[in-house]
Amino acid sequence: MRRRQTTDSPHESTDLSEGKEKLRLKQEVGLISGVSLIAGTMIGSGIFMSPEWVLHHMGSPASSLLMWAACGLLAMFGALSYAELGTVIKESGGEYIYILRIFGSFPAFLFAYTSVILVRPAALAAVCLSFAEYAVAPFYPGCSSPQVVIKCTAAACILVLTIINCLNVRLAMSVMNVFTAAKLLALLVIVVGGLVLLAKGQTQSFQNAFQGTNAGIGTIGVAFYQGLWSYDGWNNLNYVTEELKNPEVTLPRAVMIAIPLVTCLYLLVNISYFAAMAPSELLTSGAVAVTWGNKVLANWAWLISLSVALSTFGSSNGTFFSGGRVCYIAAREGHMPDILSMAHVRCLTPSPALLFTSAMSLIMIIPGNFTSIVTYFSFITWIFYGMTISGLLYLKIKKPDLPRSYKVPIVIPIIVLIAAVYLVLAPIIDQPQIEILYVVLFICSAVPGSCSDLQRCELS
Image (tube, rainbow, N blue to C red; front, side):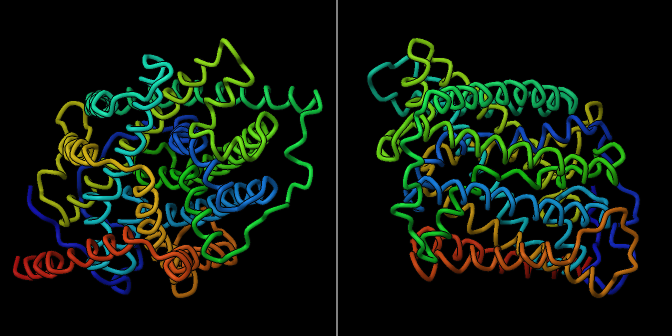
């Protein structure tokens, strides 16, 4: 397959979607599957692991709940902005394709390099490690699970997901739909349990609910990182735009259904946690959902471990599904080896890209550190989220006549851009961490490769 030369300037065309003939994947993702892809990816390990850290940084139950609501609102604003981009640039690839069509090849290569090699495989590794932790926990009661067992289970999870996603898009979506329903049922059990506790008068955590609140700029930024990890996936439908049925309608509708649903569930689940535990208990629990299960469900507490395992497996499937598409689209546009832009001749799935993503994730399981992954994952993603949103603002101001079936008020992407700048700068200024330096060095290492890539394109 020969490389295709791409448009390097947003001024060269009035239609930002590439018009040349190219391989298209099947349009098999409808509204229900779209909602499942967004909600199923968002509801993963975060809601079972992040509440402890959000409370740690915010300092009080009330401020923690406000942080969860703020994260949901920011995710909603970001997704609505992306929905407009998806109706202007009707191609799969999410941030990559938007940055490429608006800003050109160099920044798009930087995104592809960091996303394909580091960000997406690292996120998949983190969620699969969370799945493994809860999946093997019932077999080691009263003690910590061996790391080798956890990592082997995580590797097995990745291999199973690879087989599912390589075989058939419809099969991958069916898995997503089933596990999304299962995890929503599990969250509803926690919500109902919390409401029962509140009805019995267990409201001690909500007395003097703002006492101990932290208001530091950097502290709030790090709390956002932890909360937004639980909302990651709000943009996943934009990675598969070409596979959507009627994307002009499906994309914005799926966003408007999935994200408010997840936000409400997250708030109710956190209220349930506070109803069952004092803030001090929550901070020292280690596994918030398991502690909740032990206090509320007693002999049925094992159901929580099972629920978390189901939740993280479904989230892993969504992360893998969209991550493979980024690799596929980047290769199709000439920023990754050509073999990664190929698709299975019968299944029409991007098998080489999926296999590459799987291999990188398996490598990252070996050193896997969940906390560090959240830090550098959030830092990188919000750099490129900000760049993508600034591209939308450019199109709204400079190219208002571009055909678009959905328009978001300009104030919404402005708010998201301000939030992105804050989330990138605040933790660096207030609480600099070595992981961020590693990320910057990794991004810089892409520059020589980008220059040689551009030179090859000019000579071809």
